[in-house]
Length: 240
Ligand code: NAD
Ligand code: ZN
Image (cartoon, rainbow, N blue to C red; front, side, top):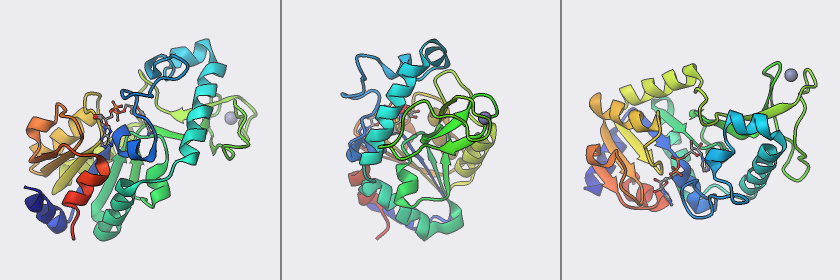
């Protein structure tokens, strides 16, 4: 089975990849649902929302500053590095869509990258919409102020209950509709659009590979579903 998947991936001119929090687990960044996902006793669903930010922006910023420090100390793992190599092999035919906000795919070298949920390494102005990178994690004191208009900025991420950028979503859907091979790695695939991108690809005739230590709603649809970590699973199907 793995050798068939490897051959498909090697031959594919168009490859679309979706990653979730699981791809960064081996970099030491906890998934929300896993152990260590809590922060000061709060669940992410209670902090990563517009209502939480309206109620207590300082608390929400403290949480993001903590995550930003955590992410800055982390390094891309073998799964990130293999995905960067896959992009070099496939060129324009490659698209990586991530739900992660940790910036590790970019640091690993991926450029054909769609960060659907934004990035905790950036802030966005609450008044004028201007985006700017955060200062280095050592120097960062929240909240950041807009270099354009001076207003307080918010994390440049998509919170629970907010809409995704429709252009980014359209590009992601196009990549999955036209892919010969689709890879879905480290996402529980219960939240949209993660739930549907793999399905879209499969319905359009793609060979669908899933990598996740646990079964997900996508598992029954996959041509190959590997119960492996991101790094081990990718290595198993990576073109030699
Ligand atoms: P999730 O926490 O719901 O699920 C993570 C998935 O990863 C699970 O299905 C789990 O079985 C799998 N997993 C755990 N360890 C793995 C490993 N070593 N290799 C491969 N898979 C592994 O995460 P989600 O559904 O991706 O994310 C929920 C939201 O939280 C996302 O939208 C994301 O923006 C945000 N989030 C981001 C980060 C990050 O940027 N690193 C971390 C946590 C949460
Ligand atoms: Zn501004």
